[in-house]
Length: 142
Image (cartoon, rainbow, N blue to C red; front, side):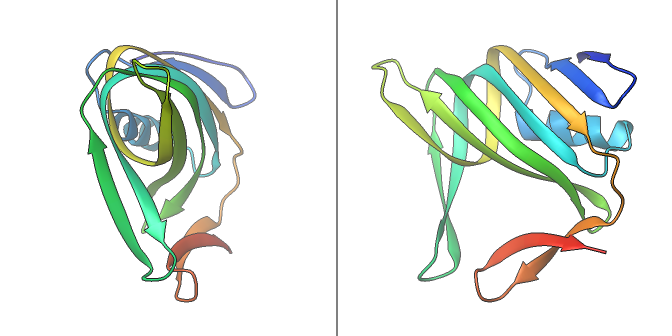
């Protein structure tokens, strides 16, 4: 992976073609000791699995799309859960017919380019805790 870093904890990343975005980004955060921050970017992908939380059942519903798409917006945050990077990322992706789909990103495979920015907030004690009311892993500030 190619990246450029500033002196104040900001990074520009170019992920390798054919890699899985969430995995590559998690590995980057682990390697650089990023405990909390934000991520954004754009990409070309040839498959993705999105996740949707059904609030009535508090269960996730996953749906996979196996097609070439343009990620028009990738945005999210970085924290820690169980000592590992925890990515909470949402995407909007444009299809060949120019319709858009999106949601919580579970996985996506780069097919072309993936250009991201990461801003390391440098905050310790930004974790996650499971909230029984919502069924979500919410921020837990220690």
